[in-house]
Length: 124
Image (cartoon, rainbow, N blue to C red):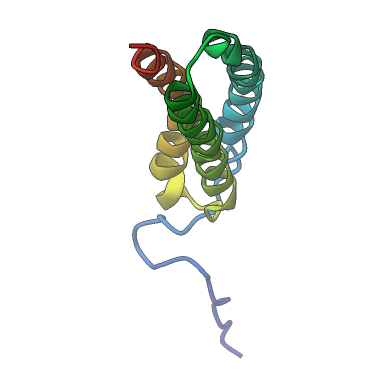
C-alpha cells in the first residue's frame, strides 16, 4: 500500500505561506512604543487649549477645528497598529507587518510636530 502525502496549506516550492512564529514581536513592540508616545501626545494635546486663552472668536473657531483634527488624527496610529496585528501570521506578510508596526509610532510623532507647526497659525 503506497503512502499518500499529506496535503499542505502553503504554496509549493517557495515556503512563503509558512507560519511565522515571530509575527507577534513587531506589533507588540510597536504597541508599547505607540502607547507611550500616544499617551504623551494626548497630554500635550489636552494642554494646548491654553494657547488660545485670549483668542478672539475667529481664532477660537480656527483653534477648535485644529484641536478636533489633532485628536481625529490620533486614529491613524491606531489603524496602523490594528492592521499590523490583523495581517495573517505568515512569512510572506512579515515585511508589511514590520512596516505598519514601524509607521505607527512615527505617525504619532509626525502628528505632534505638525500640530505644533499649525498651532502658530491660530494666533496671527
